[in-house]
Every structure is written in C-alpha cells, then in structure tokens.
Length: 180
View (cartoon, rainbow, N blue to C red):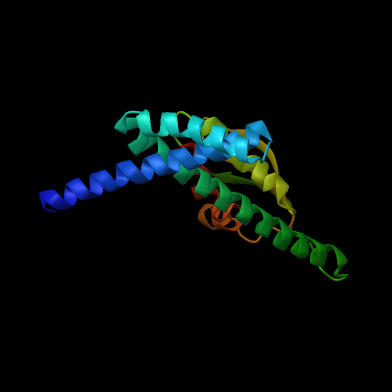
C-alpha cells in the first residue's frame, strides 16, 4: 500500500475509534444516569466527549475496536444461544413425547480447544452454555486436559470431533473470541 493510503487508513481508524468510544460512553451515561432528558443528553455528551477525543491514539485504536468487536461477538453469542435453546427444546420434547423413541443417553468426554490464561473461565462458560441447552448437561470439567464431561440425552456419535460439533456448535469459537 502506498504512503498516502496508509496515512488515510490510520486517520480513519483513529477517528472511527474515537466515535465508537464516544458512542459507548454516551450510551453508558444513559444507563448509569437513568434519565432521558435534554439536559442529561448534553451533560452525557460533554462527559463522553472529553475522554473520547482527548485520549491517546493507542487506547482509541486498539482498546475501542477490541471492545466493540467483543460486544458484537457477545451479542451474536446470546442470539445463537436463544436459537439453540429453542431448537433443543423442540428436539427434547419430540424425544419425550414420541412413544416408540428409544434413548441412547450417557456421559461423554468432549475435548475443548481452549488454551491460555482465561481457559478456566472459557471452559466454565461453555459448560454452562451446554447445560442451558436442553438435552445436555455438563457434569464435570477437567481444566488440565481441557475436557468437559457431559450427560447427553441422545448420543449421536462417539467420535470426539463430531461430538464437539454436535454439542458445542459455534459456541466454542464465539466464547474463545470473547475470552481468549
């Protein structure tokens, strides 16, 4: 990339980062103040403006973009969780209400791909997510080996990679992007 284009991109990232930070702080002001008046908006705008436009570029470039990315990923995670809970509820309801349906239940050891300083937190959140989804329940986790022990109401596969795909789905990647 040529130099004028690089300078333009750096300036664009600086300005958009400051705008994101301003919007986050401004929204945070309304949450904290719990007032939606013109005076509150003006005060909140001034209070959000000061740190957003007077901070150093390092904070604006990296921290704001990372925060916005994590918030977007967390929102995606929550929407996916709601969808999966609804779908799993329908599947478990079908299994329970179908008279000739036989269950292939049991406890399975499912590996995770988490590593790093927040591995325990990520594994705990993944375990809680699995437990929230009907038809599965996390029984135990082993931080050292990175495995979750899960009671599965209808075991569809014993292959570790396939079990990860069926039980975790996209949750493992999303949690990794948020916490690791």
